[in-house]
Amino acid sequence: MAKIVIFDGGSLWLHLATGIPSVWVFFCLIEWFAPRRKLGVYLAVNLLLTSIFFAVIMYYKYFGVIVTYHALQQVNQVTEVKGSVFSLLHPYFLFIYTDVVAFLLLMMNRRFRAWGKTLAVRESKVLVAVIFTISLAVSAANVWFHRDSINELKQAENMGIINYEAYAIIETATEQTEDPHLVTPEAIAELKAVEKPTAPQYWGQAKGKNVVIIQLEAFQNFLLDKQVGGHEITPAMNRLKKDSLYFSRFYQQVGQGNTADAEFVVNTSFYIPPHGAASQVYGKKELPSLPKLLKENGYQTATFHTNDVKFWNRKALYEALGFDRYYDTEFFGDEDTVFFGASDEVLYDKTADELLNMSKSGRPFYAQIISMSAHHPFDIPEHKIRFNLPERYQDTLVGDYLQAQNYADYALGLFIDKLKKNGLWENTVFMIYGDHMGLPIYSLNDHEKDLMKELYDRTYQFPEMLNIPLIVAVPGMAESKVFTQTGGQADLFPTLANLLGIPLEGHIVFGQDILNQPHNLLPQRYYLPSGSFINDKGIYVPGHHYADGILYAFDGASAGAADSSEEQFNRALKLLALSDSYVRNLPDHK
Image (cartoon, rainbow, N blue to C red):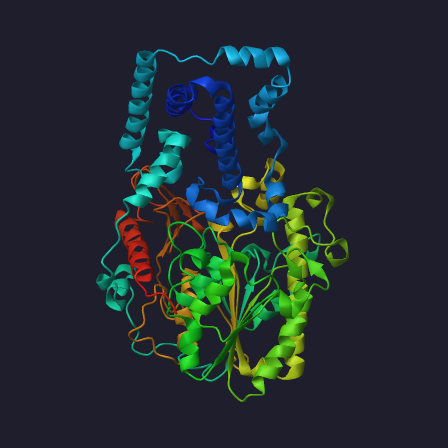
């Protein structure tokens, strides 16, 4: 079943050839080491392997990748997001446990248990050894011949899921890193093909202003200027966009840690780790960061999130990033709860008051605000729904998403209004962006895909899924403009530095100032296979290697042969390797 769900059917013979030998390896080990209790051990191993396949299915339905043992770090987060987990659970997935349930029922029968005892004999050692050797050899061959495939989905399909899980352990243990001394601003600029402008546009136009970065939960770009049933989905963002700098081709760069990963990428301009959430993998590091840079320039810094700071190891992350203080559920309380904590209305209302208090010190502030009410699966309370849906959208994930984001937009509008009333608006630069996509292609049913096609007027693909908005508002700056060059979350740090007139000489950043750079190369991890990248034309996804990959062009256009290159593919992989090496070799904070 796992292969049918994930690999869209495929060859039955391929699934048997790659899957059965790895299972026989386990069975032979049972025959060797537990011949007297084999029935119970067989059932336990069957339950274990079935649960692995089930976890693979569930993880794929959201992330679009094959889960490995690295995700065990996130087991303690599952209870917090149980609503999201259950929303992804299609009832027919549970049929994978049919044999487990059948055997448990049979175990209640005395005759079956008596029959089980007759199995407690040692099989021929020669026969078991032959089967074990052949099975292990076939499994090893499946791994060996497909180890060079860059695409993890292709690897898992051709190796077999159990073999791929074993390969992931071996690969991590033997992983080699780049020499950290090779990580220089010049090396990064060369890989990204960036040339420093002699007179950068917008340099220092927000110098000395307060900085507010607002991270909108699961907010995708298509929501802007879109109407459903004759009503705007995001009227507040639409009004703001008209008077601001707007980037229409801006993309997420998060991974297993989702929202926390976005916080990490935006505040460091580094890429996420190859495995695990950045907050857990890098939380102990002394991270060069935006908060630290701004503190050096006289700013006070704070981050606001209504959830418990321990969730996703944020307390360690905020210390590593150098925030002066954080505000979490202890500050916001549990009034008007939506999903994890207090609603976005409470978040913005209390944050606005605290920002006003911070401003009284006479020093500018940097505040990052993490919205959360529009979290997957988007089942906001009935009294928060302000958006009436046409019948075809009702009781769908897409419809729930539109209603949740309409509420998030409403709360944001209240925040903007309050800042204008308390006098902070005119002396603040705002960056507002989505943290990650909200509607994974992998978890939409056919009707929901049709609804997305209706909203886009084209098939919903990776360029649409990963596209999040970026609005940069600098009150007092008369110019508003739409930028169509490619950008990503790692670009916010250097772009803001340009606006504030703060030089980055000697700083290692993997993003670029997208106000001045017309071209970009964004390596991707998670949600897409390794080796995927975004360039000026679209999103490239590799097959086994570069040559059999696919470029998904922006705006549903047809991709041309020259729209991506193997040279870009290699540069994207090199950028990831340099980021991994640099961050891993940073000292731990005290």
